[in-house]
Image (cartoon, rainbow over all chains, first blue to last red; front, top):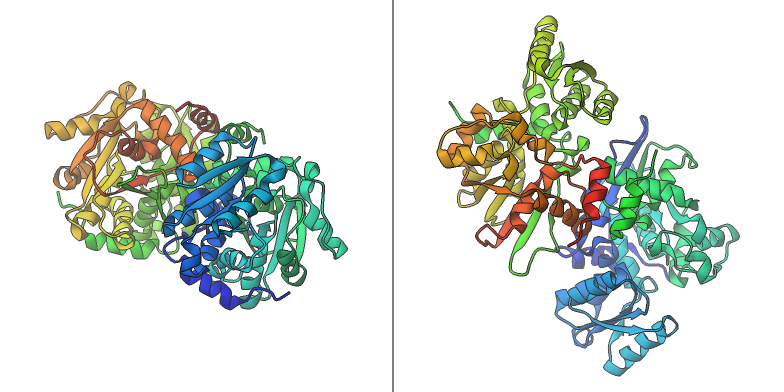
Length: 319
Length: 319
């Protein structure tokens, strides 16, 4: 399996210019003396998450006559909105397959971006998307299992190397693995001494287990669904991402649910950023005290689409 | 009274480089079609508010032997923390006079920045600061009544003109008036057709009334203290700011308490930014529908230091 190259990420950066925000890197004033934590604030992207980078890059890379037929995606979360947003930017139709039971607020957000929403039972999600794609001759934009998607997410790594000197460690959430893969390609090409560490909830630690074992394992869907980090419930890291993680990522570590919610609170009150639980996971790893100390850490705050009641609950936590 | 000049703001920008964040300008994805709202996210500054710009600029402009004796400020809010932060950056002592009754969390934040905190009855605040300054030969850093402070805040206007094309309107919170004064100097010098509009809570609308009357009026302290926007409870705009506002500001408008809290919610959920009520006031004016429509508006989100219980309450609002 050929890994994504730095050149593919550079090409993605050109495509994304003016579309994805070059998100700010914000020093966390609350990081303990002697350490420096910087936050790559992907929650400030339009649609509130890094997913816009990969989705837009893949759609932009399609031949015009293919793109014009439109795109399809299956997702209930940030990827759905990213695909809808990117399709609208090109003026092409997007159909998003969403399973029954997903919160209406997420359906509404996808509809508001001009996408068609197709609701199906959970079990039919993938087949429904493929059928739609076939029927209309449309391309499916997958959430992580595609090199253009990975290259798009990798532009975060490129921006980090350009914007920050001497990064010792980058902490990145892992679900399907596209984000950490792209970032690792850019970082290891341009700053090989910088550690790239994936972070998962302990309740959805299939990639951490895969990393320890040296082979890709799958967890049960109802096991990974226990974590509050709803963006990180993928039961198995993708095949193409796994090839990158094995080769380029230094470690995959885990955090507890309490640590995730505390970090949502710290980000809101200490850094004035609204992060969803999945986006706060790298900060939780930094704050855990379980990583060896380094001078300069970057935490990728990957998204900020959080249920208001959950954010209110996180703010009410003591400590 | 000589107004602050563009050159003074340019000099401030040089001093602030590497200290104050060049805050991002974030498009609000939720702004209605046909209009564009951009958020100048000063809540992302270290210490969580624009105040770092003015405080640091004034301290940086002091002759070294004066600065070395240290500084004094009286404030319970963002200005106190900004002065403490700036003094620490120069390695000089800061004494902050805080009145009894101010929340311990704010006192703790000021202490955490290495400042000495002097607690006095509210009525003795100013005299205590002046006495301290005299006793130790220290300079008082006022929150708005100083041209170096205004010039520091004006760097926001400079950044806006450099970073954003064709701004039709800038909305700025008004309390003592230093922020809107500095921004108006930069904007009117470099983009004279851009409107600069001050925004106040209707419950603390002394400057709006002054603007209508053409003379500076004062409101009772217990009148202005009714607003939830605790950063905007100054009962009278400053004398030096007033000279700028008369000359350079296009209008001063007001918003209701409900509109302020709704805007705190919209900023958190729609733009992933934690804003304090005072920082959300310009967004409230944009959303009110009471301003004539223009194509491109910038709202200065001036700060994000909000009580967690108040943020949780804002998130629970319906609508």
